[in-house]
Image 1 (cartoon, rainbow, N blue to C red):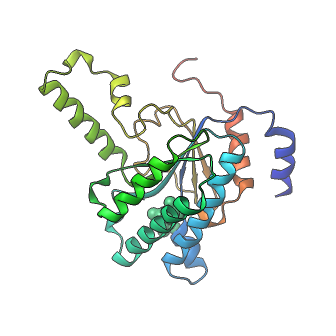
Image 2: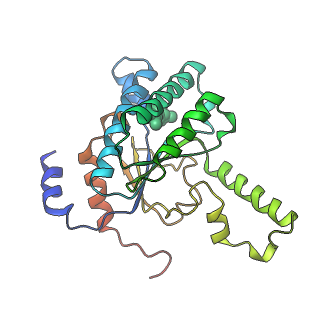
Length: 246
Ligand code: FPP
């Protein structure tokens, strides 16, 4: 802790911060198990960590933050757990509408919305509409998100445009694909943080992470503090990004 704080004093103001950070909020289940609690308690604690870290990222001037809250594969979990995550998601959306009116954060949802109930969809849209003209950090919440699913959606949209003679095959390039995925018009993530020590992408931002720097951290998400974020930022600042060059 002291080390992180010292590093922060020396470095955070001097280092180049990433413009876009992605976080895989992993380790909630293990955190709960270690305490003899149900997995859902881990998600409740994880949702609190999410609130604190999103606020911290906004405070230090991060422009885009994308958090992985629920994947297209997470439906395989027991119904009780899925329901608990959806409840937390709903609580956050209600809170964001009523409590964060003077906030500067722009809230967006990325993922396949077609499965959500009408009331959930209305909450998602209200959050997006109410916050769209703000000038602060863009917070992308990935819900029912999968990187492969996102690419499939983009390919279908582009194929339809080709079929309708709005595009020709020669128009298809990486830029066009970037413009047809959920994060269209946003920069790719510079840094992706994965707490809980797992070395996997888990289908997170597959297209966008081609040149992202990964920081795998040995801490479970509910225990993740601003000091851990500082540590990842300092680590990121030391990386030599070459984007395929030399
Ligand atoms: C991964 O940990 C975490 C999830 C699948 C759910 C993340 C959800 C939240 C943090 C709360 C809801 C979100 C919002 C936006 C309010 P895991 O359960 O796979 O952990 P484990 O690997 O230790 O089992």
